[in-house]
Image (cartoon, rainbow, N blue to C red; front, side, top):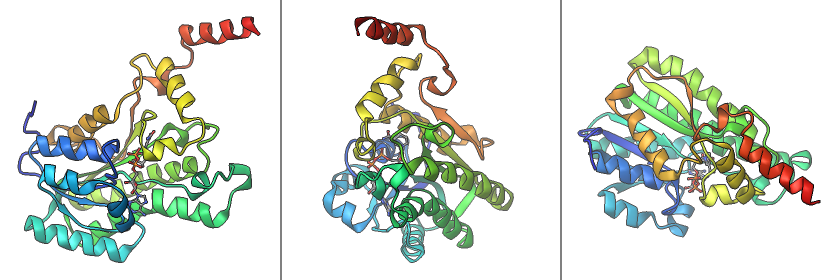
Length: 275
Ligand code: NAI
């Protein structure tokens, strides 16, 4: 059911690869709430993925761009402003990739060229996106930028590898730019720290299924799905959250505040007694 929360708003959405992608669900939800959209991803992802279907469903313009290339981002923002006939209300950064994870390089044997790539794609790209928007004065007053993070930025999750460092940097960039863009044009910048979610990026993490089950059991509300995340993203693009900025917002069913859950301990101790 639509509430018209984004009626008249225009936004760019990065990172819809396939129907599982958080960005895919966010695009559908934003459209349902009345937004006009430009969708973007790398040329390779556009070829491999199914974003054309989404573009058709959302009546959106597709502009290929590598989020690590300032030149591509400048072209993207110019095209989006031309398409919308003016400034932009919101941007979703739903981008992440670690070559170390892809190539099964454990953290203690990291490949530093890969590590730089992880940081560039998964964190610095947010700086580049915000930098281009800022310099082009592309965002409207009270605009909103959201990027997706994970709790491994605060606490160590074995197997999350160099993505943990990238997420810590991503959250810091959101705060630093949030201050500058807030002063310039009341633009808010936040990160959402999402539950483990079954997507292409998620499935690359070692032990993802166990991590998913553990987080689901520990969280009083269970894991938040990609669709739930899309709902939350839309509220942050809406005018109902105008003074929320420079925050890392947990969207994880309570996982981040739970120390001990009796049912999880019982399952664990039962397992020990069997051994
Ligand atoms: P996904 O694989 O569907 O989305 C990741 C997107 O990043 C893909 O569309 C990919 O093409 C894009 N991408 C990679 N390199 C790029 C580049 N150089 N330029 C532009 N785009 C590029 O997976 P998902 O899960 O929807 O990921 C979205 C965001 O959510 C990521 O930042 C991820 O780290 C974050 N996240 C995911 C969680 C999960 O368990 N799936 C949990 C918490 C956060």
